[in-house]
Amino acid sequence: MNLVPNKLLVSAGVAIALLTTSGVAFCDTVSDNLIEARQETQIWTTYALSPYLRANDLKVSVEDGRATLKGEVAEEVNRDLAKQIALGVGGITSVDNQIVVKQDYTPPAPTGGRGFGDLIDDATISTTIKSKLLWSLYTDATAINVDANFGKVILNGTADTAAAKALAGRIAMNTRGVHAVDNRLVVSPAVASKTTTVASKSDISDSWITTKVKSTLIYSSNVDAGQITVSTEGGVVKLIGKLDSGAQRALAIELAENIRGVKRVDATNLKL
Image (cartoon, rainbow, N blue to C red; front, top):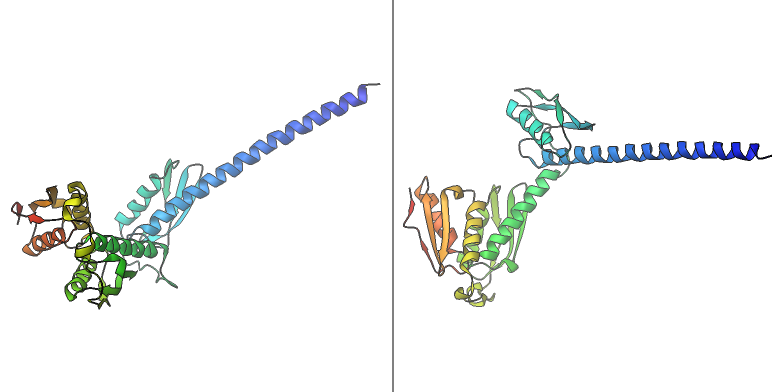
């Protein structure tokens, strides 16, 4: 009398076991696909951010930790760069680099507006300039709007003096990635001078000054910041190092002098 129910129970148990096993396999497959999609996206995003690879139409696919790269570049060094970027992504154990080097290769012309990498570059430029204006003793970043488009910067807003306007333009022009500056700042004496509204120089720490001077030099396209050591004591900034030209030395001193809190710049040991 119990034979049929027992068979039903066994059959049901087998069915449940099969469904459970299939479900686990399905989840594992979905998980693997998600990981591979993330890896592909990470590699592609890094390519898009690289000024050496973004213009190339490169294709990326990942399967079981192996990345396959396809496309064309003009130089072997770019082909190797693409491989090293892929190998740097977590979980990638090998790379099948099928990218072809063609010396006469011309990257496809961009279609539409700015690409992902261009947008990131321009956003970085705008933020960098805004930060440098904020750190400066003679400019008021809150009164200046910075817009970058393919490395061309437009400054809109007000400056309290012609000298402040000119300085803002120089700060923008000396920023990495900037090709041109359209300085549309309007000189408005009615705007309160930043020199009268900022905290007393003695209220700004030496460590803050040193950090901002270093950052300003690093962000400058016309100064080799790697050759300069910066230290601050009592608001006096010391620049030590060796530069290639008098123009670089003069610019480094000017950039340091323009940082809020700086009382004096000692460039005695900044040699040529």
